[in-house]
Length: 365
Image 1 (cartoon, one colour):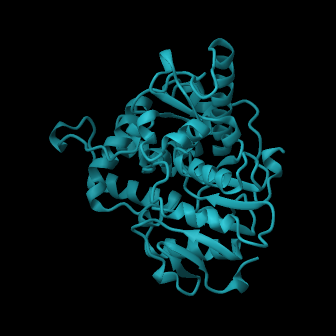
Image 2 (tube, rainbow, N blue to C red):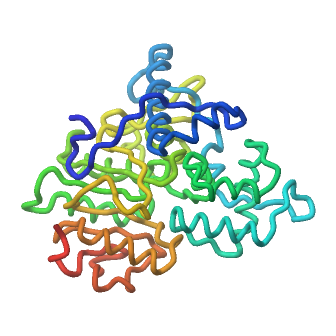
Image 3 (cartoon, rainbow, N blue to C red):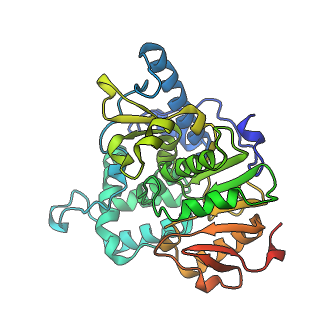
């Protein structure tokens, strides 16, 4: 079945001529200004698939033991996920005034709903200064002028830089037995649809997929998974499905053997999600602040974990008001360990540890 035909997920425009020229190439910059963000996502994800295919022909693979893919650079893209502290102001390469910081805070809030505290000033400098060097910009003022001019390609890069992506396989493990039972509930319609609304580099989405396979005892469960994120860089990593083995500390050996291929030789220390599992997940760029999402209900479950903490209260409520009508009357909403939906009690009511159901079934449709 084609991904675009999956229930609950609307078709996405296909990229025709994806480009990935270095940012310091002026001609490439001109072309990128006219690209839509989704075109660039499609280009990246397409290149991942093509890259994997070329290497598969050149590198032998032994199922369950060997990996045919390019070595994954250590620290990438995870290096972009940690809060990078900048040098003291006296040694900074660029001036970064209070006005620059407030502009950056306002712009990321307007674009992605992310509310940055004053304590994030050094993080903002560190992440954006790298981009200024790549573009050979002379000041934050000029760079932020570019963002305010609505350069869509650069707004995407700006958003990627300031998005925090912290995730792990089977993070908050108490959620997954609940999900398994929910997928197997009597009378549930088919196919079941789960939305992983902030999938980062893919570990959560693949944990959902492994849970579905185990719940039904088959690599063809009646489950479709949409995994989305606002950051196109992490989506490319998720689509590729390659990870360092140390990322698998929460996965028992029997699951590793069943769901991953292990690297050998030049690929030692790496692992790749098996194609059968990856085929259960459709990756898509979705900004939760956009007025229209490329999916439709009814959904059986939404995972939106450790995301709301980056939004202010009004933004949280606006998103939750859009989640509730997407869920079936018996659908579940999974939140993060540090999140509570008490302020949205008219929409959701708790039914487990950081698990919620629709408070008014009449909202679902």
